[in-house]
Length: 76
Image (cartoon, rainbow, N blue to C red; front, side, top):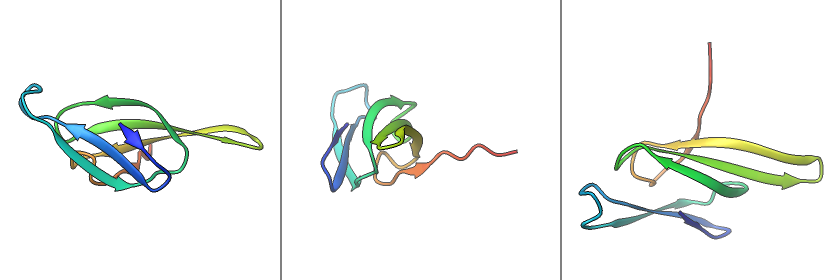
């Protein structure tokens, strides 16, 4: 995972690392701290934001190899 103030970039492989593709998405708020890739398309990303009231965190998920990220919502 790489990021700037405007872009989040991930590299993905579907062939055990023989080749890699770079995918980019608009930046997420905060700093990515940990990523867990489940397969070539799906990954979870922990994002921390250090604000004046303390740190807050959010878990994001991608299902398209890092082209788009959305918050994980835990429901009933």
